[in-house]
Amino acid sequence: MLEELRITGLGVIEDTTLPLAGGMNVITGETGAGKTMVVTGLGLLFGGRADAGRVRAQPGRAVVEGRLRLGGRVAAAVHARVTDAGGEPDDDGSLLLSRTVTVEGRSRAHLGGRGMPVAMLGEVGEQVVAVHGQSDQLRLLRPAEQRAALDRFAGPEHEKLLDALREAYARWRAVVDDLADRRRNARARHQEADLLRLGLDEISRVDPQPGEDDELRAEAQRLEHAEGLRTAAQTAHQCVAGGTEPTDETPDATALLGLARRTLEAQAGTDPALGDLAARLEEAATLVADVSAELSTYLAALDADPARLQVVYERRAALRALTRKYADDVDGVVAWAERARTRLSDLDTSDDVLDELDREAARLAGEVAELAGRVSASRQEAASRFAEQVTVELAGLAMPHARIEVAVLPRPAGRSEPSLAVNGVEVGVGPDGGDEVELRLLAHPGAPSLPLQRGASGGELSRVMLAIEVVFAGSGGPPTLVFDEVDAGVGGQAAVEIGRRLARLARSHQVLVVTHLPQVAAFADRHLVVAKDTGGAVTTSGVRVVEDTERARELARMLAGLPDSDLGIAHAEELLAVAARERRP
Image (cartoon, rainbow, N blue to C red; front, side):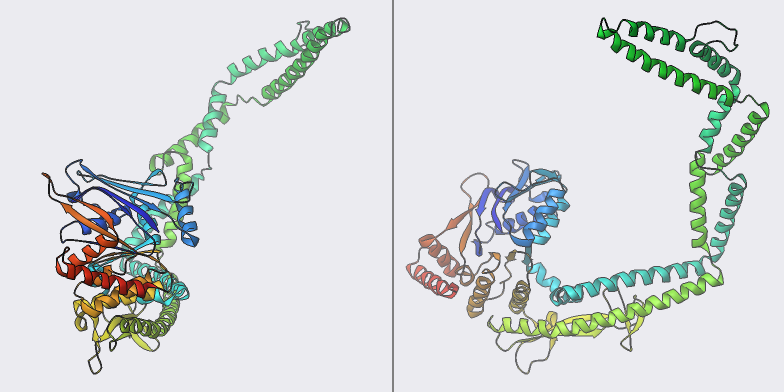
């Protein structure tokens, strides 16, 4: 859960800290006091888009810091990702996050004690927090979002099936696009292929080998300086091995080293130090003998053939002609030839290749249609369960006669997407299959089944959104849920039921609720109030925890705008007592 949130220099908030608890945390305050900045700060902390216009001119930057304490699989996954990125959790297992935004719009992020890309905060946020506001309700009205919600509910096996469909769809579209491109650009492909074949023919006639230019350069240098190399090698050989004639009495290095070794060995009994030196001379004599043998081999192999030098010159000239056209060196020419051969296969527009691609496209189309049918069947099965569970939740949210239906319909063919026969019906198919999903609301018995955007009022839409979130929470999801005024347009008994449902959700999740409703706020485990201070030259806001009498006064203010009214306080205390009884397991 998120244990603590500190916000500095953001909107009307100068510097405040929110001590958050497990269970249900409620944030209340007068309109304009800065409750929205708390949600904005949460968004920044978890990788949201930065708006420099919300940064206070003094001190010129906004800072949001938070401390996460996680458990179970979420903790293992998040800690592993943070460690891989170079950060590390604190010794007590908690994880520190921070986000800084300047008035110029520059943004920095820190996670686990290390600077990180802002995207890393977003990765962590996806696993630990879900924010729901009135904009989320608007998103829920979009067909694509409704389909995504149903897919999320359907479970991991459905997700695997959906991934397989997306992969098959991508392969099918790649083959179809390739086939269309070959047919559409046949002339240009023929021209490009002819140029590539000319280049490959020229390279194959020369047949360059990797590294050949460097080898020829070294060989040419040896042949050009053969006499000088021979003189140097012969002189060195004479020095270490003696004269080249049997009668030559010039002393050689090997003989001199042998004499020195024997002389020292003769006195080694008197002083052992001379024996050590004699052993080292023996090693030196062995090394000199090896050098002598290698010099002999070098002299025997040294070639001063002018004809060979001419051959090397001609070969280098042929290689230079290739490097002028195709690459900087011979290795680059060889690589160009490999790429050209691959490209030639891609450019092939022969009837055989086109027929093969036609067959592959048909095979993949059948695979996509089969997977789309299975995905559709899986959605149909999940839709009935989803509708039933959301309807049960709506009954507990003061909508006892309302019913949710989830319609899974074939997508009409003939739009921008390609068409396939799925389960015997021609439908438009995309990477998510051939279905359109529509959430429908029957507000009361006898009412028509209408899409949410037509059949739900603002208050009803808020309750539908909350019911869906409660259903999702039962199947896992992020451990922290944030609700930003999702109870807008709701009052009376419905508001009490929303508070009760949020409190129930808080038994398994940390819940943060920004609300104007005292019926909701009464169910909180921790109540935070955002208060505005207009006493100075600049308006600022801060957050404080309220308990006991202070909490009753805040609820009285929310009920009637009269925090000091005895009647209002009595009503608030009664509301708190009812909520306390409801929260008991």
